[in-house]
Image (tube, rainbow over the protein chains, first blue to last red):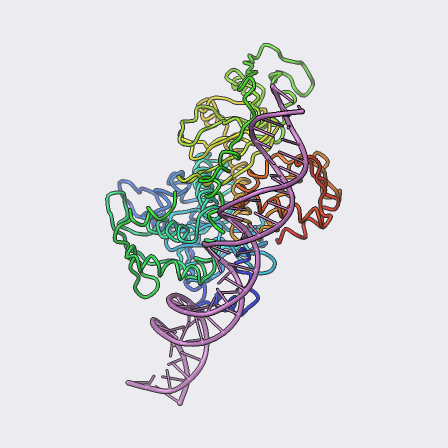
Length: 277
Length: 277
DNA sequence: CGATTATTTGATTTCGGTCAAAGTAAGTGG
DNA sequence: CCACTTACTTTGACCGAAATCAAATAATCG
């Protein structure tokens, strides 16, 4: 049962899995902002318009920067959208730009030589996207849903880190969170059953993208950011097993599903009870 | 095939696995160094004796510190040994001290409520051991082999990080390496076969603890730092599968084994060819 | 040496993978 | 608007890698 996506690779499935919506205006709307437009505001004096309402300035790494530094960075900052399926960073390619995720979900994947794939991370707003101090990427970054990014040159960030140690501190905290998450998934991959993996996955997605999430609410509703094939690659399963387990949860009235992607969880506690932790 | 260590937990195996050498002088020899003994040397002027030949000063985080800072940190530093099996940090316990691994191997494990276990990291000298900015541990740290540690109070380190940003930089680099490793193992856990997992594991161990390792040598010899049960918990397998796969590699003359723990790899390339990457 | 713990080996079972086919949804062009 | 394609998901039958159950063998240590 291990080789999982191997068959997907050799048979026709791999091709199916790799389907991407016929690229409309691929990589479209790229805007280059200078710092000419600056809104005056009690809390945003001198802050680039680009950044004023940006989540990354609150919970992301840009919170480490003052107005002056934001302005400096904004000079080489590009805001861009990428539709689902667009490759943002290729494996073994050199990375010249880092970015913040402003909206949507990016997936980090690794691929074995015979095509077996594993998603090793999902990034949500306002996560930082990039591997500092290493010019070549060891994984592929792809837009899982439509994604908005705010990107800046590697060198601009690394330079600013020297000037403002708190930026490096934020980055460390982000990477520590990613490490914690990676280790949680190692437990799921190594020791959980297919049913537990699916429950854990849905739970994780609910916590990350249900706008009305929180410890007090017992229910949750969200759009799955991943296809069945991607969920399989995230959980180390096959498409068929993912589908069967989701069907099972549906049959047990733990979740309801509309149009494949829309998930309604009646009682998050019931779902959590199936996650195995 | 998923529940893996589940049965181990419910049957008698769990007990076996958890066997620990009957604690001799457990936690014994703890020495408290002051900075009174300082050797004079062209390159080590003013450096605490404790640190002079320490690996962590070269490749570890202490390389960020100057003599004065080393002295300050050394005041609250303890050097200690722990024998194999000793728990160094408990899950959900508050962590008051961080440390560097000076020799030996420490393992990081996570346990599900029903006893299933997963090793989520192995730390070799001169790795840093600890999760900054979070007082409660989310995993258990245990000595896999006899381990020498150099530990210091959490607060001393966090204070010094503010004073010396390069320390935080080193820490970031260490954590980025751990993250890279964790993601490599996610691929193994999710997508590799039992045979590939074992080959990958042996390869990783060889690279980390064969003193004579290097890209030029084709052979390698080392002591396994983990028991079969621990290898199983690292690879998301059972003891029996680990044993059978090792036996298989032995039968194919890829490795030779003496006394269970001593491994001789004739041609590292042949082993690498079985790792699946 | 004897007791205890680890590891290996064998027989059997099972979960999840593989193979195959049918069902759905969305878009396209006639 | 509808036939038609294409991607995607679900479902069913069957298979096999690894788990489970059981027992023998080897290593370690007092």
